[in-house]
Image 1 (cartoon, rainbow, N blue to C red):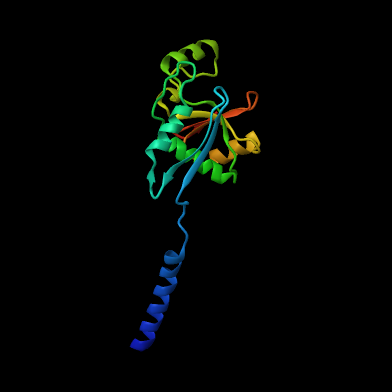
Image 2 (image 1 turned 120 degrees about the horizontal axis):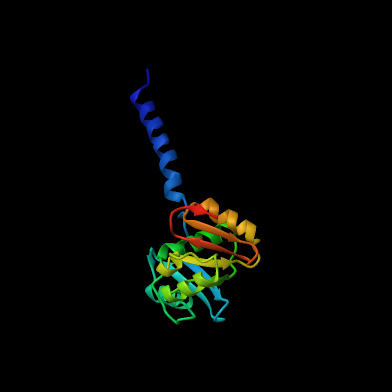
Length: 177
């Protein structure tokens, strides 16, 4: 039979082992989330800390939204913040701090319809029109590796366009093509 003293020692030791890792563990995500983007059509670049101290930074989000605007129609929309988080997670997954090359961000319905008429690769009801999709590549990371990394996140749609040298990433339901 265990004495009360030995029981308390064992319970205290167990509690210390269970609680110590939680108290000493580093947060699962850094305090700041930074994205670097380079729009290939406009030549504009940005390095934006869009998340800090547990919240989104409105001015930085607005600046990223502007960079991802429909450059053909010069229209801006509020992009899905989950898309930015997905891009950030992808960058962490491939251990890169380089700028994403942006092929396409937001597309107005007019621009999308025009592109759809001229290309079978543009969806009629594209998530680009909702600010929920982006076409990118990441210099220094093989396209095949980038695709594999984003698929492993299981966070949305992933299109692979090796002939055009980009992947499509969106915040729709998980699927791939």
